[in-house]
Image 1 (cartoon, rainbow, N blue to C red):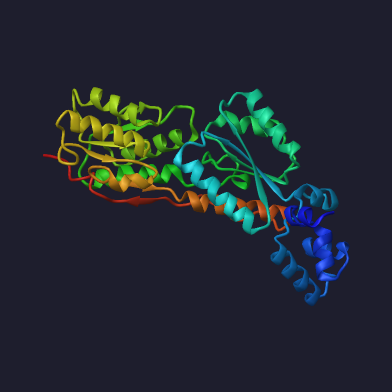
Image 2 (spheres, rainbow, N blue to C red):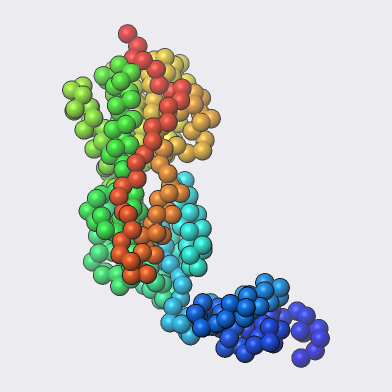
Length: 339
């Protein structure tokens, strides 16, 4: 090999071995964290790896160790703030533990699409699986397919506590509704998310539980689609009659659309109508007025989901899979009920 070729090609395991004065088998044992290597030898090899910028070939290591060090992620609706934030946290936590991610995103949640996505992930020899999908039917399909690796679902239905990690959606909705009731509101509308979404159903149940317990009027929730456009259209329709003094929106985007409708129709928020959202997206603090909302710690969800999987992979049993408590963030979109 010419000097020019030597300069441009990436260093390999034999280059590291030659520079460290050891065999390539010794370098392999260092990479696989073998306890039989002397600390001084291990450090010398690691120093050379750092110096030359050697990157082990993941596929080759998998053949030798029978481990891919890969965690699969099956995701839907990745454009949403929450799932995208959780995936970032999952990737960081996995990387710290020596794993990488293989992510596939399903655009539809029919059975063939789910089966195809899972087949692809299993073909990558994943050691564990994280499922980030909003509909009950996705989880039903996964259970029917009998996944042969440890898995965790980011859901809040409470049907499978040993394999789920989520923020307590029902509690979050109750906190939002209770805050409005404590401000004197007894006529509270709920603009819900889509009917087949787990989070939408849980938040609706939290709203209904809280108004029932407080013995205030129960209103039929308005089924939305999570978008600001729906919140805006719903606001234009609901405000024609305005027989309510507060709105609990199922997410911050629908709350934003509703506030837009209020401004267009000359309805003051919070003077005439109070509004609470859900999620605490980064922009919520900059709405006009700044939005009172329920904060979900999506980063913690991602981190703890990897903890749960690593506990199973290492044979240490399940990590803590208790629901994560949400937090009410009080800003300026809520005031006392108008007399």
